Image (cartoon, rainbow, N blue to C red; front, side, top):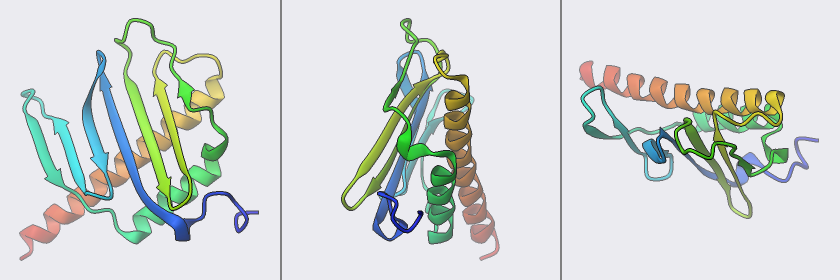
Length: 141
């Protein structure tokens, strides 16, 4: 079943994650360019390069498959005010791309929302862990 899935890891190219509130994305990451931008506690824009290794990307590909990401609707946005936390997640492959947009106000399918939040948090955690590994590697030089 996995072997014949429409999204194969051998065709995987990159992931894009964006999150924010009040109608703007305050955190963005692109694994192709390795660009990671976010607002720190002082509202200053921080720009870093964070590389996700092949093992990280394989883990995120498998996590998406496990949670059924490929079958989710693209639009899971319910907030009309623009104030609810909002997320954008994109997995790009050679021949296909899967995108979801989700906000915290989405309540049409709580199980789907929980799975989407779980995948987004897993991607965020993987980025944070990769950034920490890089910092540790820099200190040891």
